[in-house]
Length: 193
Image (cartoon, rainbow, N blue to C red; front, side, top):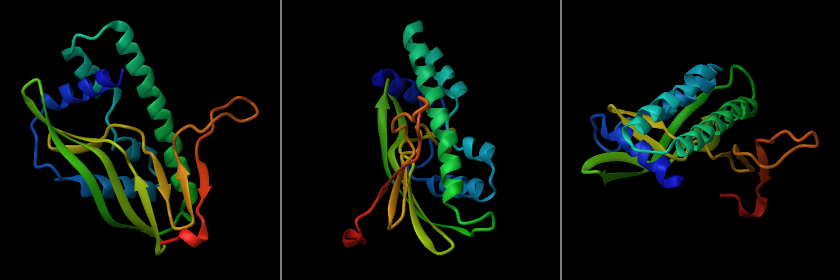
């Protein structure tokens, strides 16, 4: 299944022109942070690839209906995690007028050949920022360059500061059987940077 997801992302990217490898990652992180500061979940979601992007890529591959359905289910689960990650990040901001300041973005950018077409993607994006002076790191996981613009292609992984790390991905179920998001791991004060 991972190969199908990877192939669909690469196929989609191969249909569109590329730009330089790291161009636009800072802009993507700024747009994401601006959407959080503005309490705008729609703008936040627009930083991610869509199901429409993936369906377009899948139509160019010969993939079984069963594999296509599994990929669509995975993308719906990803979108649920994305919605929860927005809520969790808003909860971490001290107030609606909190000042969010972009510091930097780090990315492991790779250009791969797939079917003779060069595709630019990243396996990790770390977005560093401050909220009212407090340093945070947002692990955004995978990204892909489509039509000269970076998008996030996977759900975000975690948010952390010097005291805690918050995982966005599902971490179990509550007493009612609902999936829980936002597991917090407190950091050991003796190991703080």
